[in-house]
Structures are given as C-alpha cells and as structure tokens.
Amino acid sequence: FRRVLFRSIGEGCNTMFLVRDGRIIWTYSTGKGWEFDDIWLLSNGNIVFSRMSYAEEVTPQKRVVWHFDASKGTEIHTVQPIGLDKVLLVENGLPPKLIVLNTTNGLVEVEHDLPAPSLTDRGTVHGQFRRMRMTAKGTFLAPFLEMGKVVEYDRNFNEIWSYAIRSPWAAIRLHNGNTLITDEKDELTREVNPKGETVWEFKLSELPPGIVFHGSQSCVRLANGNTVLCSRGDSGKGCQLVEIT
Image (cartoon, rainbow, N blue to C red; front, side, top):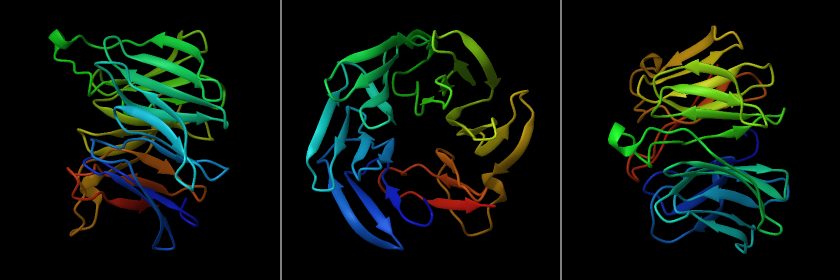
C-alpha cells in the first residue's frame, strides 16, 4: 500500500485517483452520483469499487468487466473481491442482504438476510453497513454501524464472536487474529484480541495540532505494523490519510 499505490475516493466525489510516489497515474470518472465507498486494486490490475447505487469492476483501459445494480430502495457500500471471480456485497435495505456474487456468470452463490433496526426504531438504510469482510477462515465479520457492535458469523451464519462498540464503521481481522475496529462517533481506532481486550488504540484527539481530520472511518494495518487511517470525504472537500506507528 505505502510503497506502491494509493487509491483515492470518497463522499461527494465522482472521480477516483490512482497515485504512485505522489503522482496521479490513472483516473476514472463515473459521472455524477453520490459516494464512492469500497475500492480494491486486483492482482490483474483491475479495480473493483462500490458507488452506493452499484458495484463494478473496470480494467486499466476503463472497460467495464461486470456491473451490479443495487435493488430498488437499497444501497451498496461494501464490496470485497474473493479471488478474481467472486465478490462479497452487502445491500443495505430492509432487510440488508449479504451476497456472494460469481462475477463470471452473474449467479448469486450466497444470499442471507442480516439484522438491522427498523426505520421506526430510527434506523436508516444508509447507515446500516459501511464495511463487511469475509475472513481468511471463511467467516463473515460485520460491523453494525447503527447497532453498536461487531459480530462474526460462521459459514452457516451462526454468531461465533461479538464485540460491543458505539459506532463501528470498519472492522478488519488481522493476521495475528485480533480485530482492528474504527469507531466513527467516538473518533478512535481500536485493536482488540479474541477475548475483547484492547491491545492498541488511537484517538483522533492524539493527532498533532494543525492536522484537520474529518471523522474516523476506514483503517488499514500495514505489513510494518503501522496503521493508516482515512477520514470521510467531507462532502467532496477532500479526505485525509494519516499513518500511525
């Protein structure tokens, strides 16, 4: 990530940027719309991303490989490649649905309803999920942004682990078995072990004076042990990245 490429997207933006060594080497415009969210650079050079109203894969030559529209009344903020021929998606809706899509033939291989508060309970489709991940063990790690918890499900969607936290925007299972979680409202990123014990934490209030950071959202743990945090797009005004030892 740090040595080679940076993929830049965010709220209120209509163009993604691929940056190497501080230089923009590729851009892709999707036209007017709202909210890039998840983005991946694949080993074959293609880019997979979510755009709230759809998810898509494009080649470096900007040819669309596949396209998946969100169903009426739903939003897609999570997309995770599983190899080069499958993706995990979540359609925020009533109910939200986890989907594993075979991108070579368009067939849905897994579809499962996820818990969510109803709209009458002040829940919103927009705020259900921002990140969901399949782990290396084939389990599903779900940060419930509005329900104040991170839950891990096995392949049969039985709950096998959970951790209570105010507003989990992102949750990532690390190689050491711990889970790295970003809490948007409390403006912190926390690493917890399987017992739920905090082993590392960074609050935005710890940033040096002069660094303006618009909210705590996605997080990445680098191979060198450092953590990269990314803010929200701040309505198209630009996002910030910071690397923490």
